[in-house]
Image (cartoon, rainbow, N blue to C red; front, side):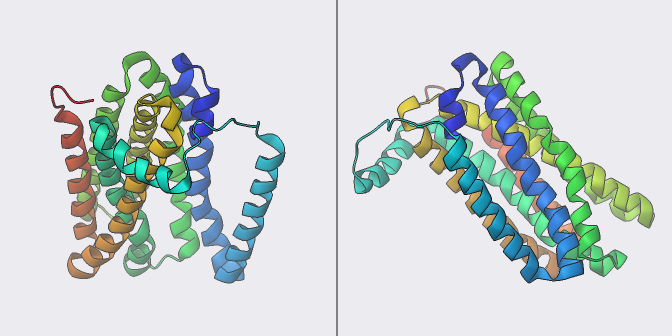
Length: 276
């Protein structure tokens, strides 16, 4: 992603970052479909071997196809790592982006990490069926280019708030599933998955567009800090989602995801005067 931001003209950075993010997000979400099918028919070890081969081919393609980049800094590795702390302290916008996107990732991971267990327990569906819900999420991922264009035209802040609000609304709607028959529940889950994936990915593209413009010479390090927040959120969401499912069932997972998304929206709404 930092490479895409470096190659993109400033006025089109949001659109180009959004386009590249589409490929990344479709890969993440469609991998659920592929892995569910492969695991059910050929075993989970086959999926790991396939993934290793795919990564090797991706590395070869990147080596052959990506242009050469000149380093933007000559700092030694230790100094680079220390500069991450400096950047974190210096830029309030970076901290808010990492917090907000990390909270959205809590809800995202809590849902996807527990979905297969819930579907098996409540609907007697296997891993292939659970993975198929990734198709709904993939539809949401197509929001990335649109979000990038909106961020270029209207500014990233509005897109961040709309994305967080849509995620919170989509998760909250899942609370109505218990009032519906089984078929309608599954349809609502698919619809909500498309909705919150749309919102979360739109917010991510907007956050990246904003963060990459903070300090161009440090885009890779800024990206590292932003995604540290994302992956901490992912890991936390998986852990808390499992606990919520064990203690309070699927309703607990939905409550967790909704609360995390609303908190992310609150972070974006509480703009402090005089911060970077």
